[in-house]
Image 1: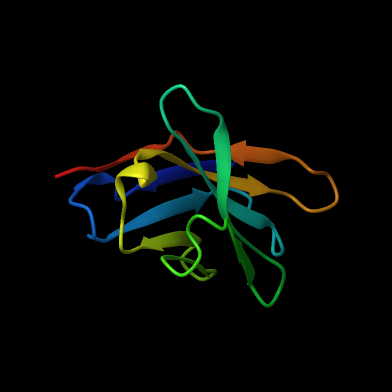
Image 2: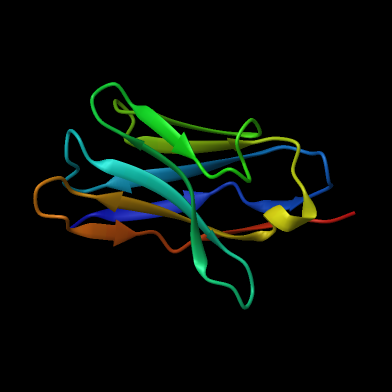
Length: 118
């Protein structure tokens, strides 16, 4: 069984920073694709960032480019999302997703709440 557990969310003031962590356990693929999504109340779940391939290529939504950085630690089976210069519109539940290559099987974490407010 594959399990993803997000942590690191919380309440932060505008302009502040947070680092989200996604701990992955179980059978994990060598070249799985990891993604961070977020979902604000009443809105769809949107892709924020992704990392994939042997080189760990990253991609970001335009709304977070230059402010968010996604990384992974293969040895620890951890995926991170460093967020800085946070804005009120970044408020959402953030989810981690793992997609297996070839089969396309995917798994979600339970999410972690990020609230940006003064």
